[in-house]
Length: 119
Image (cartoon, rainbow, N blue to C red; front, top):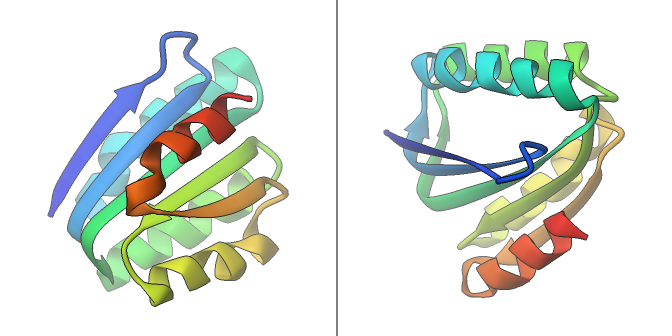
């Protein structure tokens, strides 16, 4: 699993790049960063970019559910960028777990996703 984190210059947008299978250790790396951002800026925006993504390990899925429950209203926008139909379905799957505006973008439209998350 490869995890890349890129904090936007204004500090309110986090771009997360994931390759492979998301692990519990990855959550332990980026959740404190997100919680710090939420503490500083209130609502934050996330661009979640998946490349050759294979889902979550069981421990990571549990961490994701706990994070979603705790921060239901703290994410303002969520752009999901992926390469397959099941990743597109994640946009619908996420809706009950957040009050964020969610939009899916095909990987070829990454620039559109970045423009949307910044508006």
